[in-house]
Amino acid sequence: MTSSASLPVSEGAAGAAVRLPVSVLTGFLGSGKTTLLAELLRHPGMARVACVINEFGEIGLDHLLVAKSTEEMVVLGSGCLCCTVRSDLIDTLRDLFMRRVRGECPEFDRVVIETTGLADPVPVLHALMTNPLVAARYRLDGVITTVDAVHGVGQLDEHRESVKQAAVADRLVITKTDLAAPETVAALIRRLRLLNPAAPIIAAAHGAVAPSVLFDAGLYNPADKSPDVRRWLNEAAYCDAAESGHDHEGEAAGHPDHGHAPEHLGGVPGHDRRIAAFCLVVEEPMGWEAFLDFVDALISQHGESVLRLKGLLNIRESEVPLVVHGVQHLFHPVVPLTHWPDDDHRSKVVLITRDLHRGTVEELLKTHLKAPIALD
Image 1 (cartoon, rainbow, N blue to C red):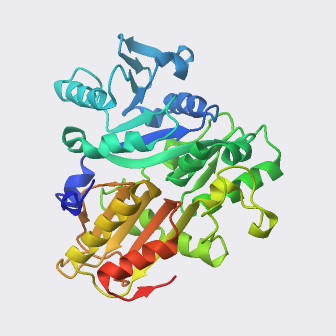
Image 2: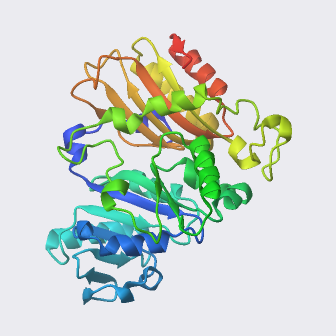
């Protein structure tokens, strides 16, 4: 998205829910993505799942029962379908959907994209959100990020890609917990919670995780396909993080992007200081054009710094609440809800940013909305 004109209202929650959910599996090199996916493919609950991977050989399908195989597609004994990215991800997803329609492959109702060899998950998210044909058939369910229990802290110290993967995740999976000392795992969990207050942290040894724990991280309740905004937004986690002192406001500017922070900054590593997670609350209903002006200003001035944005909005021109979701400079179509999830009708916007502080976003919001903002 590059302008407010790209923030259309979608067909509504019911229509959006019927699109196929897509989970993006990412994680730093050696963090256990392959092991996790291989174990998931064994699970009976993956029978109606299609996996899009770079190469079959990297997943280790030789230890799984292969029921049918072609050059580009493998059907496992469990019913799970795997296909490779032969050229472009968009082409692969479109072809996969058309094969499903024509009955040329088993029915599937979920897709997992494994990003082996791609350190940054954002380009995959962009592909899902920007191509009209893909967006009409698929919707982002969530980002699953694997983090190595043994080497994770060091990777977060040394590689900003690892920090970004953790910050944008909807689910964080700590792998190789059987190989790491308990105190090492505890330190990693504390570190991840600073970077991403809202994402559940799941421990996995030998890649053993139930699919139900990883999937259905998006807006929609899998049982009845209705929006579950309170779980998805989870603004309380951002407020709790701020209250516990996990606020690096003003620390990132001017500091080198490597190594450990000076002692007066509490030992917070340099990459971590660049990440901020916070929630902004607007007390009164907002004007739609005013909010679009805020979004325009935010993405034009700081688009690359907005890693994730989620919001539940009370808009004066709308009789129902609206849900917004953005990744950097791109936004999903706005989803109108049928009702508020509770009696709190304030607008809430949660953000995870890099090199962009809460105060800067607050001032931008105040400038365009001219409305009171609760500093939670």
